[in-house]
Length: 122
Image (cartoon, one colour):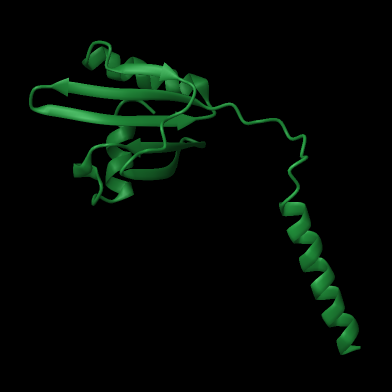
């Protein structure tokens, strides 16, 4: 009986691994939208990007940034992954990722950084 249970575990593990490695999956790619924020207003210099599947929320972020800093927010399709800090969060039921590119953000907590990022209307 032990051999049957052990064999079942190995078969299940092999199937799980094989399913996880299937590169022929036909699942549609998830469309992401982003707002690349680049603020340089003398004493304030911020480079960050917010990315989500909800285009309306991303547009709200860019509009909020641009209302305060002309043309500082640029809508796009994905953020650059070459950041010093990446924070995944959720607000109002919408999951998003915030990327921070300035070295000053590297040691800050994601909670504090996400609070700052959501201040622009996310």
